[in-house]
Amino acid sequence: MEKNSLSYFFPAEIALELSAMPLPLGDVREIRLRAGAPLVVVGKKTYVGEKIIDGMTVERTAQRMCLNSVYAKQEELKNGFVTLPGGHRAGFCGRAVMENGHVRALTDISSINLRIAHEIPGAADKILPALVSGNDIHNTLIVSPPGCGKTTILRDIARQLGSRIYGFRVGIADERGEIAAMHRGTAQCDIGIFTDVYDGFPKKDAMQMLLRGMAPKVVITDELGGEEDEEAVRALTHRGVRVICSLHGTGREDALSRPGIGALLRQGIFKKVVTLGGVGKILSIE
Image: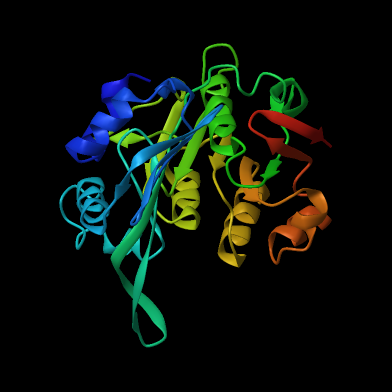
């Protein structure tokens, strides 16, 4: 990653501090801003800036990350994050504006965590042999805590399965825009030449639309949630489509305790469970 590639998202004084830091941006995983605290950059090492960031700087950074329209991004912001060009995700803390018991908006933003998306060709090399069996693919659940590379691995699985080597038709239900990083209809990440993407759609809708319109062999999606996602996965697998997806958690037992996902595991719909325990660290494939 070039040093200038992230500069647009920050006011000039933050961009200048980033460019002067001793940590190579190619190693950076997170950039954190907090009102009343210094800049923190997390990579192989952690860099802590010297200058205290004020609330106005955090607010101006939020505006830039929301393409100068926080109002237009409120549908994403009320969930605590926005997805940026390039597949990066910015998490936000602030004050909730409630309406009828639901969060309507997020205001008075006090801290930002920019999680940097990385393309790592070959990230799935150790996993794919266990997932592919001849001309077929095992339904697979990838489980790990946040920040352990689930999305990076999903992206590389898509790249490889959708390449000339494997030649599978791949569909990506990219609700948060982090796997393919679509921009004006073109993927900013290498996801394979036989891969189609529904970008920004709720996962359950994207999975149904892929099934009806694109005839994929395998559908890939990130961060399964509740019962609606379970139903969509079940509908795909009942029609012979394979599914590879991820879940926040600590392993199989944790996944079994989740409503919906646990039922898919107990019924044997997921044939493989991959557990990650750190960045690029595979704890088990079972």
